[in-house]
Length: 306
Image (cartoon, one colour):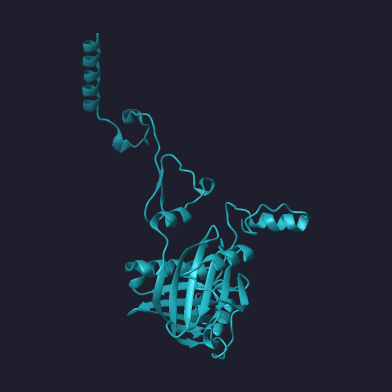
């Protein structure tokens, strides 16, 4: 049995609070990411990990020491680090002759690798190379995906899901306009993925809605897809399963259309509209001839019933 797998009984109140934070919850904590440097990582890969860590703060852990491991061959070390640092996302950087400037981005399920995708860095511009103001730490980004490949190919579809998981940040109930400070833009075109980061500038427009300008903030990466390790459909479906307590209770006789409009169905007894009281108007009064015919019809109905 692994040292991290055994049952640990807390001896202090601080240890008890620490273990309670890691217990399974209905609403899980914000996903943390660990950024790991391989045994032969060069300066480019190291700087990429530092820049991604700057975007992920404070929901990230940067390992500064080199770790000799190969994620596609042996995943035990990644699973060990995931359990140790309580991270469900990871980015691993390495460099060699066969696969230069290599990045592996992936996610965990129950401290085991769910899926991971290998990307090659073809062009890189660092945060410090672009001289302008940056966004404060912990800012939630807006994510934009462009390109048909993200909706057509299974590998790109899973990559899109992985990138959303990696960069989405905390879940918020309300959004204010001043809080929209930067954009992460991903473009899939001709077998490559272009990653750009922009700062959002709100300018005066002469009306209530401000004029928006985008200023490149960095980092900037041109990536190419390499190897993939995707979870099976059954395991992927299991990882997406929602607890029963969080599922919304179905309300009877209520439905919604595609636009979110709520419709309700009311069940009523059959009504006799002939006895319905309407507004009294001279134009709606019955003429004497009509009254005689109505009286004759009522008499004939009584005779038949008798």
